[in-house]
Image (cartoon, rainbow, N blue to C red):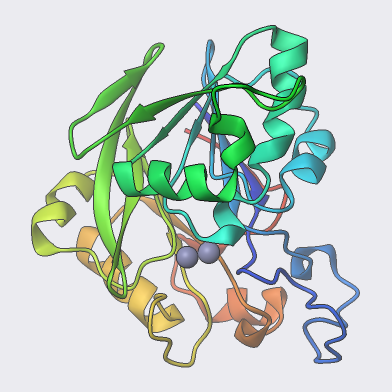
Length: 253
Ligand SMILES: [Zn+2]
Ligand SMILES: [Zn+2]
C-alpha cells in the first residue's frame, strides 16, 4: 500500500493569503501546504480521503489517472469543496464515483451541491454513488476500511483504518473505546494544528500524547497551521519515528 500526502495544511492552507509571517514567507517547499487530503493506493485500488478546495491541483500534481472512491472524514468546507471536480473521473473512467461518508455528511453534501443530487440534472454535472457508512467495516475492492470515531470538538468525525495504517484528521479527542481500533499500527497519520491550544484540533502535544498512547511504529502529523512554525525547526523537536508530513510525501506500507 502506498500513501501520498496530497495536502497537509489546515483550512486556509499555508501560506495564507496576504499573511507575512515567517512560515508563510518561507522559501522552502515543505512550508507550502495545500488543504489536507491523502491518496491511498494498493495493487488494484486507489482511493482519496477528502476532496478539499485544492483537489484539482493535487490530482494534476500527482498524475492521478484513476480513482476508485472517495472517503469523507466530515463535511467542513476544507474537506469537501473540491467534489465538483470529480467529474473529470466520470468522463475519463465512464462511471459514477463511489463516495463514502456518514448520513450527516450526505445531508450536508445535498445542501452544498444540490445540482449533483437533483432528479433532472444539468448535463456534465458530477455523477456520484453515495454510500452511507456507520461504524462497521466496509470493503472497497480488496481494501477493508474500518471507520474510527473521533471528536472534532462536538462534531463526530470519522478517521479510517486500512490494514496497518490509520488516518485521523480534524479531531481533538478519540474516545477510549475507539483507541482499540488503533492498536498495532505500522503507520499512523494524525492532525496537529499548532502548539497553542485550539478548541477542535489536536495541538502538537495532544497529537504526541495520542501517539504515545497507541504506539504506532511510525507517525506523521498533518493539517498543520502556519502558527506551527517552520517545518525544519519543528521536525527537530519531534520524538523518534514521528514526522511532520509535507505535501507530496509518499509512504510505503
Ligand atoms: Zn479541516
Ligand atoms: Zn474540520
